[in-house]
Image (cartoon, rainbow, N blue to C red):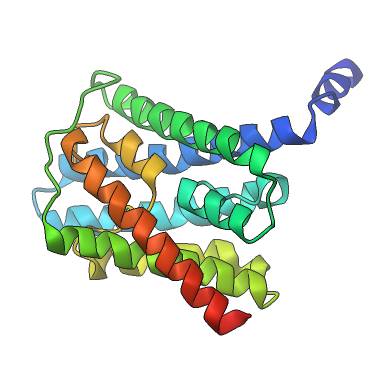
Length: 227
């Protein structure tokens, strides 16, 4: 037992943070995709499917953000990681490894969910999500996400973020036309599952545009209001 603890303590802080980002996004995407598959199998009602997916996602967000916040800040999102760097809270050299870990975690999460439900580990989604209104939904989803993260950090209430992020994503599942992906890494992972939560890979570029634009808007708004 002592030998095992000694080995764990040898991990550097940056390595632990990268591992936390990978595991956190893995967990969230496993929940999002897995609950979507389960919802499809239990009901033909799309409204009930979205409700089930929402409830599971809310629980997953609270759990994994709370668990890994002390290790990596539980950024779990390339847009958030870049915002943290711009705000001077993260070293530039950590941004790329974090983003790689987030994308890897998202892909592994989708593959895990697919495998648990007897599907091919990778089956690219055919669910096209495009059009101006849908991209506008992503802009709103990402803008509010970054605004609330920056706002709570800048006002000294970062401890509330697990609940506040989950609260916004819960609301945004229902109030945005895109059902609030708001995360490039998660979007990539969800493209690997041709199920309820999936997104056709051809829809990703415009989703990225909306997410990045929304993140910039949210950061600018937080800078104006909370500085």
